[in-house]
Length: 143
Image (cartoon, rainbow, N blue to C red; front, top):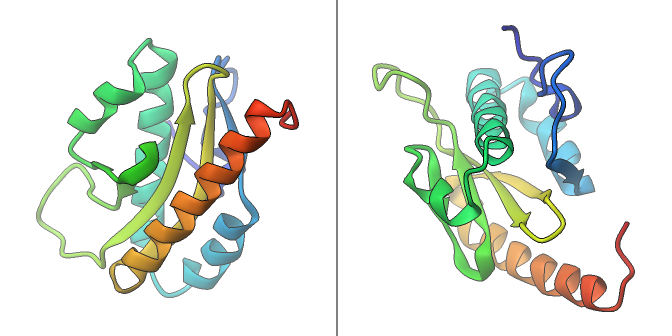
């Protein structure tokens, strides 16, 4: 099964997904920035995102996703998906795709993408984004 590194095309053709992905602009902007310099890391991050989405659609609860080797827990319910691939042989730059799983609505929000050097500011950005999103959900403003 071939995966395209573009975020919108991570689901295999013909696959019916219960969970949907809500992309924040920041992910696409940063993806373009990193694509030429770190293509293997990005490919792994998006393949790991596809694996996580398949697990969610298979009935795995968001809390259980933390047991996956490439998922890290962050504050405010945010999960960080890293670049770890199937083998530990290759040394890769540390990248993370930050997501927030909204279990009630079965929406996986992709918030931002970053490297190790920006980790703290990325986590802070995610916390603010999740607070804003939760406020929108409470007020019925999300689609």
